[in-house]
Length: 421
Image (tube, rainbow, N blue to C red; front, side, top):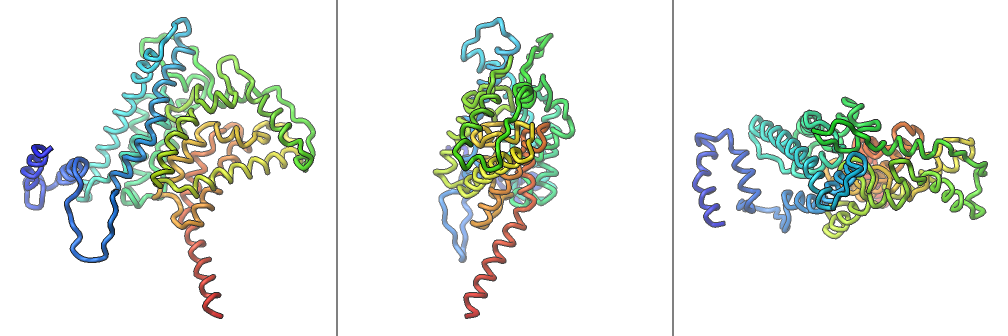
């Protein structure tokens, strides 16, 4: 490694001020600091000492995302052999090989296009290349379906980086999560590519026909098409029957579809069609352990989001029973919300993103409660759009500064009242 260090030191004058390649200094600095710890020293106080910097924080998040990526690669191949090559008995290696053919090109496109966008903005602004795209580039493919055309991935990535981050000033200044902005753009710009019955299963280029799985929404709708809501009283939960009523609903929701098993266990394990990295709650929880141990993600946001989801699901249940709603999503219990769609994935890896979330300790709890509330409301009130975490987090991103403002103001008022005595 000393040999590499000597090479970097030798070419450094070309990129520093006055050098022939001065305009490309952000590229040199990005490579140098990625390989080695910066050698700058603070000469006067205040001094802050820590054994971790932004790059190392990003690497920890990437390590936490690896279980989702590895399972996603396997699941893409699993779904392919289940719905496309139904006559072929595939091994685990066969499924992984098919998954790699789908996932690797998406990652190459996302990192290439997003990285070039970051570099162009760094050169224009004459500042260092931000490390934030390391995680953003890792997240974008995980929230996309494996069937999405690569050119759509490229355009969505550019939109997410430019509109979601760079127009606000780059890493640390953005108010919305760039990966979610890319996902929202893809959803609304190319709705047929992100919804419908043929989206969630990878199709080999040479495959002529495709008997694909239905999406989670389509499967859920068909599973509950014959569901009729019993006449439960508004306060029936007081007599101890709430648990049995939830069991009735989940049994109906968990009926095995012709193509997709929507039981709770199947949703928890993630062996269903869906976005590459979001289907397995088990894989998400494995990564969440690293997030919790290292303190990279806020436990208050995770707790608040879960609590908001649980409370809202119970309130909607009682409201649905009061008005006699025949919408089964109104009666969906909390443990189903937890494993459905991207709830766990988005809560762990996107809601806790430190730049766009609330910063005050009490504000983080309110921020999480808002996300959980919005997710369930969007899912239940509009069954045509069962994935509410994406819009729920973006909605909370917009209100995070306001939440922090009122939390700080409340502390100021308390101190005024305390010292006024």
